[in-house]
Length: 395
Image 1: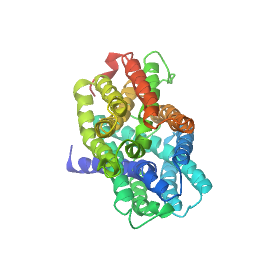
Image 2 (image 1 turned 180 degrees about the vertical axis):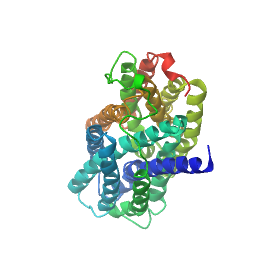
Image 3 (image 1 turned 45 degrees about the vertical axis):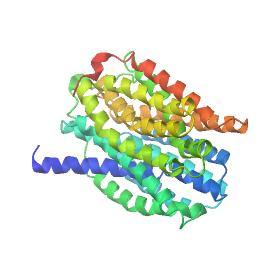
Image 4 (image 1 turned 45 degrees about the horizontal axis):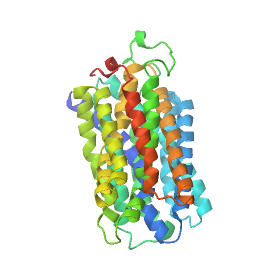
């Protein structure tokens, strides 16, 4: 690529990555390392935390469905930056919400705006990269998600002694607001048409999203959404349940998760390009299932650490490997395909915290609820074997 083309690709990746930092790292997953602090402050209890997570995932599902209705380039140019800025504003508003009821509605609204951005930003950047013949770089967008997890750990734990209650959201908001403005400005510069020249005329006829080739991939992704969400919501709380009060992993478990997620992105991007996305996805789900099972097999420090590293080091890879694999099956579907995948993923996610809440109410332990996540990831692994092998051809 020329120097100018390289600069444009870098800015496109920065635009998508910044959006994911705002909505998923700071807006959504900052809740996970903040939850033990909010419980200790008396603002919430564990069951209320699980309920807030459920409502956030309901919003995420609604947002993904809304993104499906707003998937045309003209609508995306308005909806995407607006949802991004609204999401950052909600993160700030949570810093003034001392009531559980108001926080419930804010987490719902956070999920809706997150769902729109998480569907549309990667889809827009992926389509733009396809026009530049640089599809294989699309996984690098998710450095924003991994980097956002690191930031979420930092804004939750480093200033913990200075804030209490709802004010613990303020450091996240201080980062989210300027990043949202930057990302919105950069995303509006990306131009794609309804019928991308990167898609040949032979590929453009309308076809069903669910067919014999793609249905196994959708079913696998549904299991992946349920499988990863329990550790990604409750790992710090699980560490407090299984470890002594002075253990380093009480604060460090989420840091290991975030660090592994960042380091894993180039690994899975490379393996997908080298082995094919389908083979890489099979290995990903196997490792992720082992990670969710680890606290059940080895309760204590070993299980918590393995869960953090293996789940943190795989879940982002499963997202972009599935997105690319799906696009190789339906290259003409674009944002509609991304929206359908995220809707399924989001729908299965909301089941996990709800079931965990029910289990806790019956006197069960948080670690025991991870059985469901392990079973869901084995489901995902099994269905991935049924995805046609030719669809993972290198691009």
